[in-house]
Amino acid sequence: MRHWLNLLEYEPRELAQLVALARRIKAGDDAEASAALRGKILTMLFFNPSLRTRTSFEAAMLRFGGHAICLNVGGDTWPLEHRDGVVMDGACSEHIREAAPVLCRYGDLLAVRTFAKLRDAGEDAADRVLRGFAQHATVPVINMESAMEHPCQGLADWMTIDEKLNELPGKRFVLTWAPHVKALPMAVPHSALLAAAAAGMKVTIAHPPGYELNAALLDRAATWCAAAGSSLDKTHKWREARRDADVVYVKSWGAAAHYGDDDAQRSGFQEHADWIVDADHLKPGALLMHCLPVRRNVVMTDAALDDPRCVVVDQAENRMWTQVAILCHLLRQPH
Ligand code: CP
Image 1 (tube, rainbow, N blue to C red):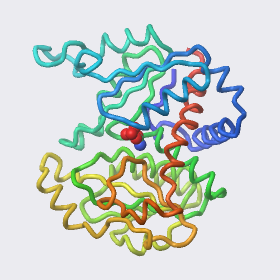
Image 2 (image 1 turned 180 degrees about the horizontal axis):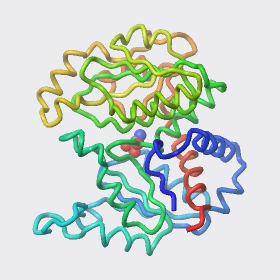
Image 3 (image 1 turned 60 degrees about the vertical axis):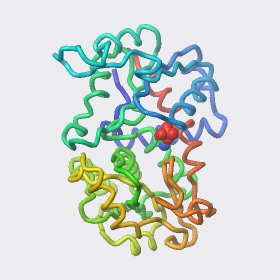
């Protein structure tokens, strides 16, 4: 049985097929989606808040005859433990070893949102909560953003670029770091990077020194770029990178070396406050992207977000269409 845990576990060719399917469904060719989703139940477990992910999954299921159940862990459910072998004499009343298979008896798909803790980069890389659900589930598991990746966002981003720019191989994709008020996870930049690499774009990552992304993931993105005849580069110079880009993808993330030290993270953001993205950093015709939510005039200026080149609402809409494609893909496999 295949899950949808991260882009890293899929081949670029498979991801491209999902983007193509999502585009066909959005264009009105919905027979496959209706056949796959009608009467199906998606159970969503949120350890963290959401606006787009929850709503787009619910809308995706409802539009095509299915149903979605949304549970906020610890609010709607018992607080859940995921570690093995622990004495559960603390806040958690139930273990995912029971919770996951129970929920799988009620529905056809299980989706989980569980953010990075940002205390230990090695712990985050292990993605233990998501992996625990995948281990104990008896239906396909969907990652709705975990410590390491946000694959639904990455696929929607790919679809959005595909719609706007058509031929992607060779186009210049710049993932640019931006300041924030607190450390944020690397899941979105990881998946954005992998999606751009899988699409054959010429990828540049721009960030200040000390804000390196996960090395294994960067290696994979470089491999995918090379296989497509493209390249992956890194730079500390935001101005040049943004000026030449066909796509400027904006995201804030924390410095792994300062995990657990909020003052150091804040100082880093203040030191690099000039990395805020403005409309005049982009060339005419470029796309400006962000996964949302975004803090205006901290991450991106009002002028950037209100610029016609900014496609953040299209990205958010495409979450729904690409998730329909992912749901179809998971439901049509025999299990
Ligand atoms: N981009 C995204 O996942 O949005 P939410 O956190 O609102 O779900």
